[in-house]
Image (cartoon, rainbow, N blue to C red; front, side):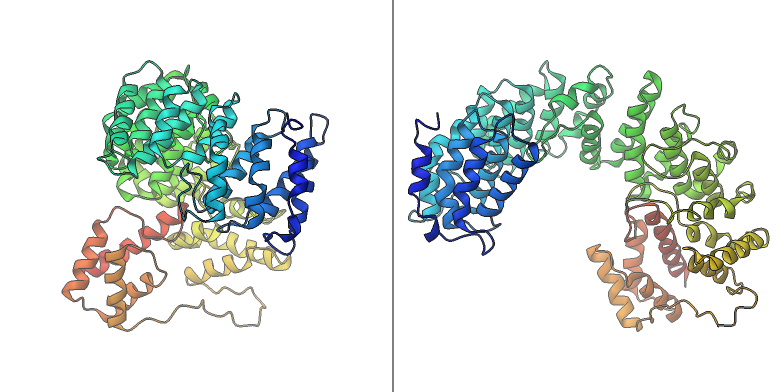
Length: 563
């Protein structure tokens, strides 16, 4: 096939030396060499060599935002290789074509787009009839990848929809169609046709496509998922259907399919237009998961409950019974995250203190997160103020730091709390905890451990001497930012209330207003609006979001209580 097209003769006929390269380290003369390496690769070629060839080709041809001479010259040869079924990893070539199309002035359109006399536009115009054959390729992976070339064009997407029969390609097509239609003029005939397609699928026989149709309709009608949430719940909680999502739910920005839980998480995000519906949906996932014995579904519900909890104070009342109901779950992961949620809920969890106390010795561990169920239950009891958490608390908190550098975690995920975040609020129990804290501090100092500064700050917060006996050096007071002038503090509060963008000076501005003692009517109005806002006042994305939000809301309440 390649020989019939005399690809190699055409490749050698190009004066690669005269072409503009992507950069000085990527000479254009290397392009034909790499194209040959890719063309000659077969089943016996080492995967590492194929990886290297494709990596080299991308570096030689693509520079974001630029369409160089070398890309224009290489385009027909890329198309040759992409169309040849003997070429290895053809979707990678289609991806590269998409990158080049985005940086070409035409975006890969038939009419060339852009300026009629531009070289990239002319090159794409010549090659487009061949490139569009990729949309009809025999390999569904190639067809799905090629959709990126027409991702913003409802007409060609609709044409493909009516022809496509592979479910994995149809799902990706639907999701792309909804976004493309939302970006075009709603009076366009194709917009109405997209809506008709989606509406028809909502009552179709394929449950996966019904879910895809709802999600695809959301950019056109944000309330569509709210109306369809009973149907979404029925399909997403069906254990027979759960594996099907992991086989066919592809999107254009990902090479592997999404699992059922990923799709459910996306649905919850769409339902957040109405938090009552969103939280009831999450609770129903948990209830159904318990009823049918689907631990994976229960974990999904807890993941979404946690995500909502660290973003919105209004969900606390709904998350509490969900988490409490899973404290005795047979699955370690489920109990682990349920106990974590109870800890984040703080004083709201007080009615379930006995159940948490029963978990103090629970050794259950998560497959993904650090700590045991007992660790999180103990932290929950400290947040409640229950003294049953105190025996062994300090020893348990510092133990992970003895042999390693603390827990491993990714910011934003549910994780064990830092030592200072647990101990600093426990000043009322300092008399009980103080000996263990001083012993831990002495041990950390002697071994140059990681917790020295944290433990000293805990002692300072309790009003205790942060130095060990015999330590001569005065321990400095923690640095605090200077308080702004009242006018500046007022401006910060009003700007934060109006724009909502977090800024680290906001807590300091609240302190300045507290010291000033008088609130102007505009500032009182701004603080009142903030107190009613359903969002966390925090820079964090994990449990610290709730802790910081609680602290800041308490300051706002104290300010508003001033006469």
